[in-house]
Length: 169
Image (cartoon, rainbow, N blue to C red; front, side, top):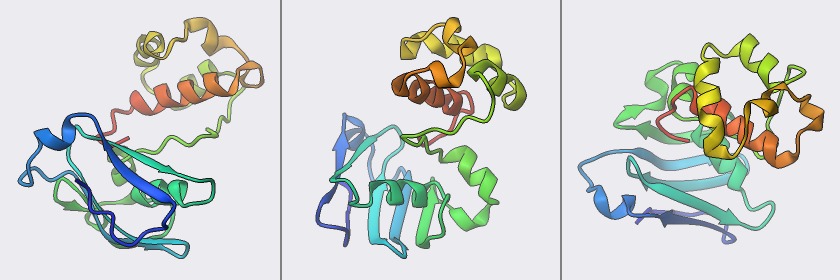
């Protein structure tokens, strides 16, 4: 089970799926000790490789703050490592390739998802191959971002993250 340390009372860290039982303490995954920001923590947690973790809580309880701190998108203090490698032992972009965050409101800076991926992603074929897994088609890539539903934009952002093959998402 994860160690949740001191956290906001209305935020819950809960294991999902069999990954918690399958991995013993010898296999180090994502580990945080005393992770804190100006508005969060301290939080302690252990997430085994292959495990899933639900972060649940009321609006404003710190879920996004925690995820952004884990992905090193916001300044944080404390110890943070993945597979035994300390976050500060590598450049921030290298950490973020390993530990990715997909926000609820993804940002798009091109007119269509296809334009975005052509301009900023090396592997458009990989993106297209993932579309059926998120119940989308090539047609969605050609639509203007403004014409996509919130859910379609979120699923395309998930594809965008997955083609980069992060180890933690």
